Amino acid sequence: MVVTGRPVTRGDVRDDVPTQLRRCLDAVAQQLQPQGMSLADLVSVRVRTTDAHAVVASVREIASQLREAGAAPSISVLAVERLPAPGQLVEVDATATGVGRSSTEDELR
Image (cartoon, rainbow, N blue to C red; front, top):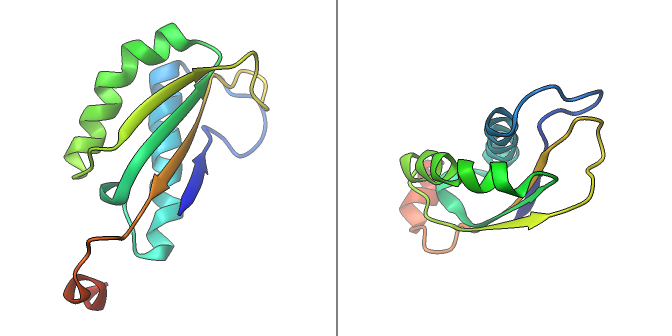
């Protein structure tokens, strides 16, 4: 399953890169939940950003948040000229898979 996390759904974005990244990961988690998945199911995370230096500085925080959730996905950062919303600095695409879950885990969900 591929989902996209954005820091807001509409309007201007006024937060810094770390805050926007947290909001993006929260949005990813919310989209995974109805499918019986969580951040622990992530296998890759792609961050598009207009400020690659700030994102690279925040990668430790992202990785820490994902480790706490039980995930160890690959993380890539792609610099872009602009993103859809005014003030938006980041957008996250994440790929999750339920492969490897036992049937008992699926039954419990």
